[in-house]
Image 1 (cartoon, rainbow, N blue to C red):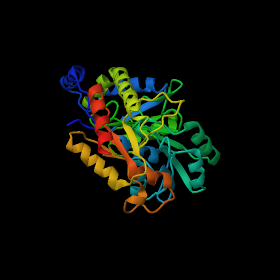
Image 2: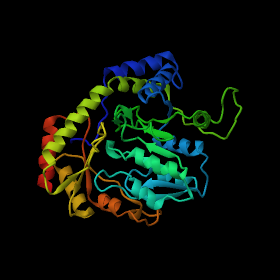
Image 3: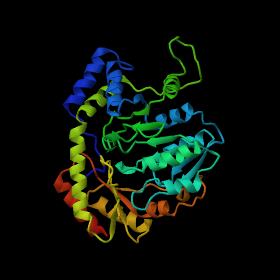
Image 4: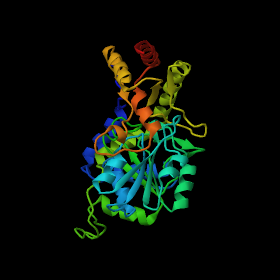
Length: 359
């Protein structure tokens, strides 16, 4: 079976994790602090606070911004629903904005159609390693006095003129889950340069305790990442440039082999973005979800694991109905192909041949 995703764990990861165990600092520790420091440098000096996963990072972001039940949060109609799910758990109201039919990401125009005086935060998702137009979206948000949260779970390392995604909004969230560009198994991070936000994030991350042991300044939670996981992340970060180049090479090969097929539409990567592809999404033109699911089943029979695109709130119970036609079209026709550093060029050629044969 050619897996859809596979973590790339080598001897360096093993060495660092064993060192963390031998140090007996298995919760907090030097690897945790070092990884935060290295990531902060990568994000242009913005502070990165590690946490238990990307969803925890979103929850901390909402808490640090003071969002409450009844507040409206705008999220894209096509994208992983973590931000919407957390909002609903807090009693907030997610408002879904449509996405571009080419980049599959939030647009300034779709944002303008749903933003209002009730909007308290905007979450933009950089889907599959591509990006929404951060400057245009931030401009609209600033006009309405609303903070932007960049969900960078799928775009770690993608940049604009050397500036990483995650440094344009008020807050960014990261994921280091097993399928991501670098992994700590599970894990995530919150990125910001606002000291008031960062102080609150540190409190919410550790039960509201600051310097005085057992003194709870506010009702926080335990969102901490362990030193063992951080050791894994340190090794992954050291190897990230090699991971990036492999992902770029494989993505280029996919585009060479599939880009001229008239039955397919590949996700567009904006010309101004230096991407680190997380995965490869293709849309099967003129077909519905039943045909897309049939293609997924046919590929599985020949040993290729693929995934559907994200489902939209209109397709799921409990999320309401929204005017997001582009998102609904994508959700019914996108298939997501394998992309990870253990793939070979021969694997990619085989996947493309089988995909075209399955249609």
